[in-house]
Amino acid sequence: MEKVKGFLILAFLGIYSGLAVAQTPLPKVNQLGYYPDLPKISVTPEIEASVFYIKEATSGEVRFTGELEEGGLNIPSGEEIKIADFSDFKEPGTYVLEVEGGATSHEFVIGNEVFENVTDAVLKAYYFMRASTPLDEEFAGKWARAEGDPDQNIMIHASAATESRPEGVIFSSPKGWYDAGDYNKYVVNSGISTYTLLFSFEQFPDYFKKQRLNIPESGNHIPDILDEALWNLRWLITMQDPEDGGVYHKLTTA
View 1 (tube, one colour):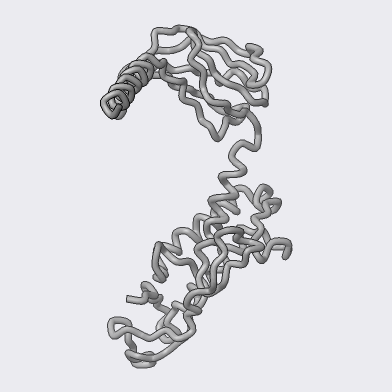
View 2 (cartoon, rainbow, N blue to C red):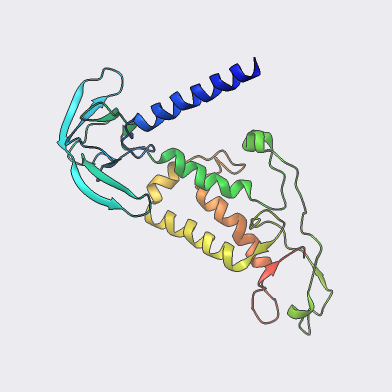
């Protein structure tokens, strides 16, 4: 019986492997979506087809037809590719891309809000990295957690000691963002991040004024992106030496 089972397993694996080899590679699309007026590209490896179709995902109706372009060898993947450029198709909706012969992509969206979810997620990530505060379930969901170290008793290291703040002096330095999977906070790293948030708001103020990230400050008449930047700026102020205006490099548990 064991031999029979082993034979059946090997036979199944052989059939499965044959099916896998015979499968046509799927067209690769941007699953986040495409903006109507911006370029729209799909790539399909190792195919002989010359035509592609944009079809409505639900009805299957063909809404756009185009010719595949030779893309040559994609060196990282080692595949010969063909490119479907459907930039001229601008109708919002949910679609699939099918190449001649039947290989069909996953569904994708064309619309003016295709990146909103990922934008919200990227900015909300700063909230999850906040130091010196609990993350309540109301705002953090399943990632809720306790406060961690409040950073109220920070000791001056010998390398940062001055006459007015000698080694061992205690000061308070709450807030800021944890840099990684530990309790360290860095001025340089978070300074770049703070600049990125402020510059983003400067470039797209109308967008960020309307954004709601469900953080504790949401609804306080200050855009959430600026509230998040303030969380770190208020920590950066505590890292400035009151004697000479210099800024300590980092706050660390090590």
